[in-house]
Length: 494
Image 1 (cartoon, rainbow, N blue to C red):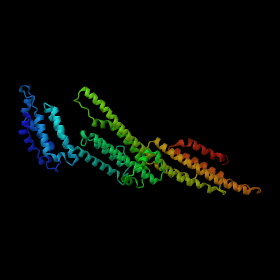
Image 2: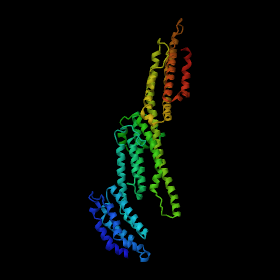
Image 3: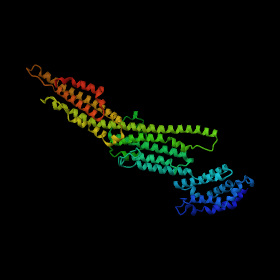
Image 4: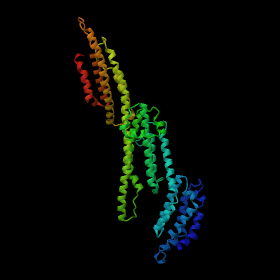
């Protein structure tokens, strides 16, 4: 009972006088607990100055006081009682920073006391009982509100691309804020081991919020560009279409007539975010499941096995998130291809339809150069692929792949429109031949041959443009060869 008597008569009265609200707040806002750390140092000073001889006597085997647990029975129990009675405004604070700082300092104090005690397990028990006073459920709610609000603020900016920069390899402000929020979850000034799993869940919520925003943003651009709806084969699109909730932040950020370059930014950021997640997995696991150096060899082996299993789970979760980001990147890339193809095909179709009227039933000589419209066809591609975003964010191989996809659409349109135009001209020529049958010494000049020649020259110019932009493979495709062969029928007559 010696420890209890010392607690009731010496320690607890001292602590009651020490831990007043005025001294705990130290002149700061109520509940801010700015002076708590200094008071804990005074507690250690009290033990050293006023209780030093007693602690020395307990440690001395010759005194026979080895069974007296002064640090556990007197100091730790006294601390628990005074903290629970007088510091409710600290451990029930509505300020996340105060909860974190006061919890961490209290935990550190008990760690020192465990080293002074002859029964450290009893001190750890008192520490656990004391730290349970802190409302960590409220703490995680406060952090979740803080971080989600930060992320929402970045995602909801009307100007999605304020300036083209590559801070930490990321372009979009929302992407940079996401990484900042994820880092905050694991920052020593925020992370607490008892709520580690909840902070991990919060990190996943932040990632999920970003994915929903990006998917909804692609839906907005889809509508603006008028692209074909192929959500049946696109998981990222199908998921966002299936939600009945509108994402107003995405509509605000992505619904302002953004250029196709914005999609390049998202493609690059999705790739970078995947790399960051893979890189951070190990450090997150270490935070969540720290090794216990005080455990036995058998316990350590068991803990290592358990940790490896949890590590695998976390990595699997990260892989699932990365898969969603990769789906978004792939969808954005497809939209870039479709958007550029739409621009190019529209000009190409108009240009091809203008060829026949120039030669039908005219004495105009056969052409020797490509039509001027061909340069207009490739202008969107030139502007897009040679701009800073594409040059800095997209590899040469990916640019070539994108160009090949767009030129594939152009060649399909070339085949369709040229065939239709030639068929109309040939049909007219055949009708004229029937009317002209029997007329003496009258030869009709073939308009279709001139038109074929023009189409052949235009096709060759289109292939040369593809090569100059970085996609020489276009000229080697069966589609290109088939068209070239069809138009070459009159080459010997030119």
